[in-house]
Length: 372
Image (cartoon, one colour):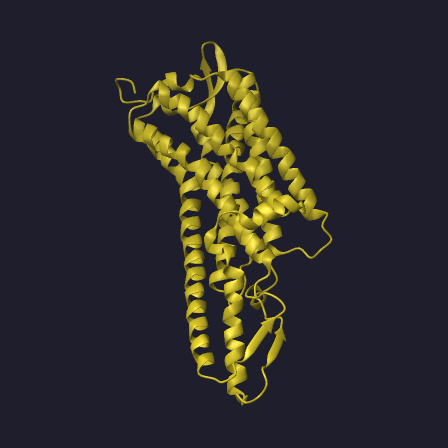
């Protein structure tokens, strides 16, 4: 801050190692490009029926490609030119608009994935979300929310060189603070709150059903002890297909990585906006800014990891974290077995008859919905 209460232009200058920054962004760009193209190829070339989650993953891959091409690649070129702008004022404004468009679109699609999973688990009997319409709205909103960039940045003359810089150097600090808050909410905090609420309800629903199943099994065991010959129920399949549990794990991991990559960056951004700005802050922002964009590079590899046919990776996926989801499939199965046993008992089956063995393939939780 200068004596007039305005943001000093010294912080427009790079206070970090430019070469390391360029190399880091180039590596992330290459990983994001290869990974997202591989995801699009795997889904689009798959001849099996495409599910709703596949449609959302396609859009997430496209949004992450926008981050890699419109944000990372353009920033790499800008860094190589050492901040000098050669394309004029209009191109400067469009350049900044499309740099933000990708991250907002990616965040919106991740939030939409969480809402779709929430509908599937929490409200399985309700109509499915209109994902195509909501996806189109997400893309349009991402573009609209990026438009303020065109008014924040302009072509400026600095050290006899034309550069694409913000206008905050000539404005009171509250303009800069408003801009930071707006960017943090649109790119991170609004999707973050959506993700927290959606997955908190998902995990609470799973926990509640698990407790219900355990109570059901206890009640079933008590009833069987009162009979001379218990009804024996054997199933040939599980209630929830493993693929559905795998999808839930995959989306949860994508969301965790989104939070881990983005939260540190926006915390330091808010600290800079409402506190004192130091040279250390600018260096930290330069590092965390790259780390935030790396989320678009890891998303496709999360999908490829969960969709791999490799035996060792599949075995690792079965044991990967998320204790709350580990036994969800089997526990839900026991709930349906309990219900089947009670129906058989009430249908007039006497305890003097021989043991009854019922081979069944119960309807899965997700089959109560539209195909996903």
